[in-house]
Length: 408
Image (tube, rainbow, N blue to C red):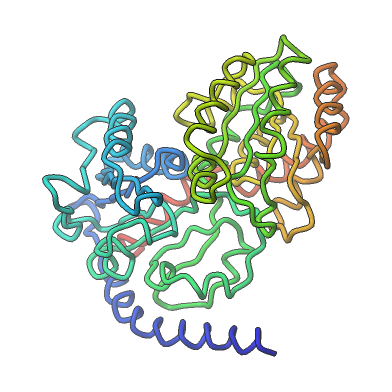
């Protein structure tokens, strides 16, 4: 009963706040670009290079389309340990983007000790990098941006958990979001219908991009990648980082000819420090141990580059699993499985090797390296089903923007 009362309270507050947000949504919805006389101006907020690949396919196609003018607005990464923006990571992010795109297309959101005014940049649409606004300055929140531009979002993670409607009712980000390009139809159906905004599923560009690379038919590499999660919460599957961080190195000792790569979630060490589970010295000693064992930490900027050279993925729950799964190569899943997964993750789980302890991980790795991949056919069949939903996603999103901008 108490949970039901809380749910009703959240929904009531949401509905009241939505009425206010609708005033701006209704006005911005009527904003039109004159077809043939003016380019559709689109800005992409970029704050973490690790998740940029989710929006990159759309940005890159827009830049090649004469009907659009697309720019990147680079926001300093936020360091939760010190509750401040990181100047060092900001410069690294700028460097990363400048190696990929023309400098003229890249704008700094912060410079000369002040935040740039987004409203003065003349964008028709602004894409947000994540649905966590607390790491953006208040002026860059959807409720402010919707006053002058159409707010858009492509999920930074491929949804693996089945969230209930209340999850979204707690997030103010979605109140003033004009176009939400959802993870799935399942997610889109959770949102109330509205005359003033769009919650739609058109497929995900990062999957569309992954499918464009043909799936591998076998374990064609002795590179093994480990991607442990950063958080301990059971509702997210937990993490095997502390249980397996030393055992994973023993794999290299037992099978010397493998190439063992570690890519913990970017927040893993920060979270370990925050919770007092590791000190700076512990982290440094562990990094030295990885090197001594002949293993390495991943140095690629984008995880997709690492996936292409990987033969076997050992992982906890992660939103990047699906991208690797589409390569057709095997996944060994180590985290808890008694949690509520989304429909697409329920599908791909049928093609996972499930390891409940370290001994099972070792056994599965040994079999796969011998070419004994019992789930290969299962994976390939699942991939064929996923293709139908996501091939052409990037093009569909661009066409949606065109129709919306020109009011076609």
